[in-house]
Image (cartoon, rainbow, N blue to C red; front, side):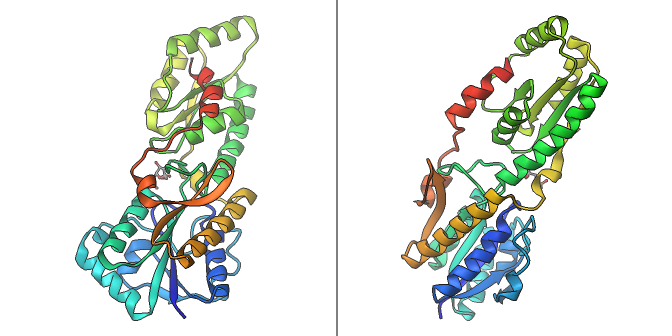
Amino acid sequence: AEGLAIMTSGGDAAGMNPAIKCAVEYAAAKGYKPFLVYDGLRGLIDDRIVEANRELVSGILHRGGTILRSSRSQRFFDINFRRQAYENLKRRGISKLIVIGGDGSFRALNQFYADFGVPFAGIPATIDNDIAGTDYCLGVDTALNMIRQSVDSIRDTASSFSRAFVIEVMGRHCGYLALTSALSCGAEICLVPELEYDLNAIGARLKHEIDNEGRGYIIAIVAEGVKMSDYLTRWIKDSLEMDARLTVLGHVQRGGSPTVLDRIMAYKFAVAAVEALDAGETNAIMVYRDGTYGHLPIHTVVDSKYKLDPALIRLGAPLGR
Ligand code: F6P
């Protein structure tokens, strides 16, 4: 049987494990011999590749992160190391790859395809939700739920102690996590890189609520990409005369058992990836857009910038003024 290898690459995200499991099982059902690549691109070079079996992918569905581990490899930029990776695949009869990861990983595998003609299918996975062409990346819903749980806890102490809390969330340059969690957690302020904000207007709005409407506490959610968390915390203390604390949520957002949505999305992407390869696609990225699953040529994905849903922007904009 033709070998098909599955790997994870770049930042880990919940949903990777269900995608690995489903890809292994579906590829086997389609008559391929599935393999697992451990440690991402590094493992491809260093030959950490094993034939998959049911046991290797059992009991992993509910676990966050990736059992295959991941890496960001510099060596893969060097053709000699890519050749080494190719030899490892050839020796085992592996002629197709599925990579679960982000833009950077897709680009790397596309270079590998250009060099040695090994077709691959990409499954978008990153909590940042910043991959163009798809409305959804694996890991996002689990990260949002971790954030929601944290903000709900912070609200308990904020309301009990009449304080403001600035909560910094991840997302790199993308404000998706911040905006979505600000709306779902009922934040008063939200700053994201994609939207202009006006501190004077925010100040006037909240001052009015504090003085006339009994507002006793404030929740502000700030995307890490705006680099405003420390400043905003001091600004609230000074301008609104309310005691304020900063919580940087950090890597708790990357972990945790994948939610129902992330598991189901993982299955759908995994099946689509095996089918795309089976149909002869050579470098397609799986996408979910406007309620439909499909795939796009890699260039459409990696050469464009993600766009936030305009409806989300409309809902979130008032939190920045
Ligand atoms: O891309 C995922 C992400 O968690 C970003 O949200 C964050 O900025 C970055 O990775 C953190 O990277 P690292 O895990 O290398 O600290």
